[in-house]
Image 1 (cartoon, rainbow, N blue to C red):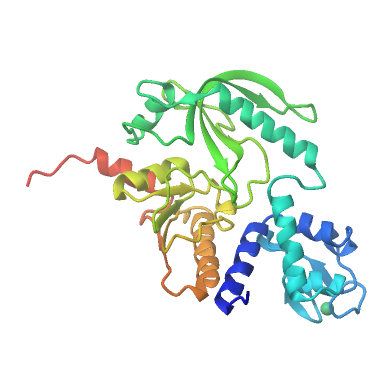
Image 2: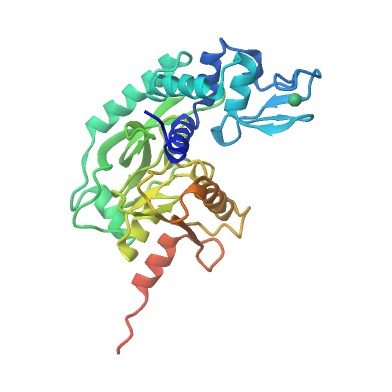
Length: 337
Ligand SMILES: [Zn+2]
């Protein structure tokens, strides 16, 4: 069977998207841990010259490199240069690794990842679906985000351990709090880890880290609050995503941090993506920067799919997000017509 250009491009897109965030493992596995991927300046495996002109930069988890002589490039070119494979062979090799590595079985750091997944599963199973009157419902209602039925990816944990690291010592359990758990799903749709919001008296608990992700390596994963149609809204915070959903009816996912937002994995079926940025004009513009970085990436990725639309919405007021906007609208006295 002959592949059309479109099918060929789709196949490359799929592999690239699935491999995002896992390129270092993939390239190490395919090259027998070639020194190029240590992230140190060295001779260039592409132009095969110099002593320090090349560096594997892996920007945004995309397996990129930069050579002062032959310029920037991506993982396929690098893989081909090191192994001598043709492009098609390299693509097949990457596809075979995507199945292995991205499915969560990397050759390296396996014990910690597996351990964290197990821990996430344990905590998740201790929690229950959110229902009227529980601590999560009270917290969300207090922010104008009450719903008759909450998304399945949110749960209520009655007493979640809160740990703190003091100095160099191992982290210790300080106390237990009720918590809102949010399941974070990877590109394959499988639960990767959890986001926790510690609560007290229907509010965010007064703790230095009241909101945190259970383990590192979220890399493009998201809290998939609602099932996308051909449209999908993207916000940073869970509360912001819920506010956008309540005000627009749109399915929305939460990317959790500015750093993760721009790496988000999004399904092919979505034709219209609305990014609801935080307005961080009062600090370092992180919210806007990552929203536009995501928009830029999506536009570039979609250049073969011209029907696709990407829009960015930023709240007018400095230092606010769409959850603040939603709450202030709710609290405004209703005008009499
Ligand atoms: Zn070079």
